[in-house]
Amino acid sequence: MEKSNNILELEDIHTFYGNSHVIQGLSLYIEDRESVSIIGRNGVGKTTTLRSIMGLTPSKKGRIFINGYETTKWPPHKISQVGVAYVPAERDIFPGLNVEDNLLLAERQSKGNNFWTLDTLYDQFPLLRERAKQEGSTLSGGEQQLLAIARALMSNPQIIIIDEPSQGLSPFMVKRIAEVIIYCIECGITVLIVEQNYRLALQIASRHYLMDNKGKISRISSSQELTDSPEIIQNHLSV
Image (tube, rainbow, N blue to C red; front, side):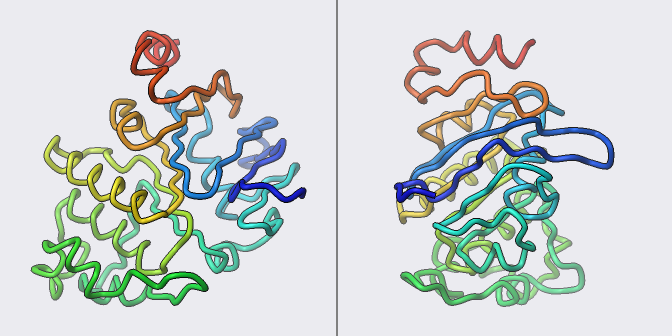
């Protein structure tokens, strides 16, 4: 791949679940320190795209580049080692472990600035400090989402990939999640977010891929463009 400012790039990827051809020729890119969203209806391939990037559902065709490496056939643990953290929609809090152990299990030193430590996370997430000895799986949905994001940050990633962070949360917790993600962006982390709540996506990301069936990108827009013309995204989601 030619030298570019893209920290993440997908080139014509095709991903299958069994015999079902879910992603058919998806290409996209994200620049270093950029915040980008993928917006689309349920079932168009948004989560599968993230799982392909992370090697959880590997693409059968095409190429994926992360941080200068071609990672197309890499296993998930190796992909995480090049500076990628993934927050799935299910949150995947480790059962039987308290909040602090969930965090410490994900701790990793990076090649860059190791900003995120247990202390810095507790400063940013005081609620988690209060619940440090509580079993993570007994937290509320919003608290589990905060824990999942905090756990991802413990690996000191360059890229954080987040799937549907507002799903099932109260408006108060959605606001708090947005503040946390925006803070990550301000700290220089590249963010890729899949979010059904397009208003939250517009608040967080600066550029947006509008996805149709089978991972087809129908439009790439800035937040300003979609804010000025909300009918674009409303028509897209209502199709």
